[in-house]
Image (tube, rainbow, N blue to C red; front, top):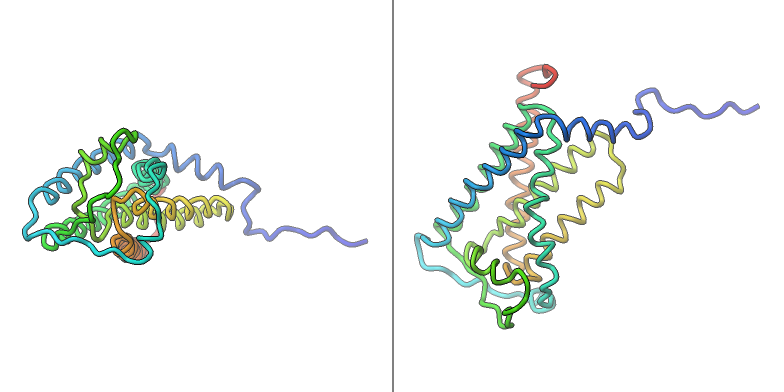
Length: 237
């Protein structure tokens, strides 16, 4: 009689990743919520200051052939705005204060690098040629987020930074590939939406991808280095 195949001893029990995600979500939840909210508030102070007080004349970003192929899609505004939920996922899945602090530090450095670009090399996207009067959400968007602070797109950069960290955390808990695929698709949708709603051009998005990926790689490497130097983590710290 053929013996039934046995699972390797190092595999987690079925759906153990769900329990791990729940633990990560609830751990320090109030701190995570108010911390992310405060971070966003401070960021927008700097963002609007550079938007209205650039150091040099604003340069208009050029359009590429791909920009002309992507139609204006006002329905993509919901995906564009979903960034403000998406960026909370990675810190929301942190298990220790050490990881949260490292993540916040590198996210702040990413934002400072983008704001420095906006201040010393101010750019803007070409004005929309279509009438957005009456389209829900666009009047508010134009009032809050003008066409400046274009390249690199911090919208895309922070999404890229988030996507890489979320992928890392999902791999740590051994989440299924489908869930990691949702994470990747959400990032792609946000990046696409920045061009589809005409808040950015393709070159802005490319710049944001490069900036976000660079800071994500540096932050993950630094996080691993700090953990190695400090030794094993004390639970909950």
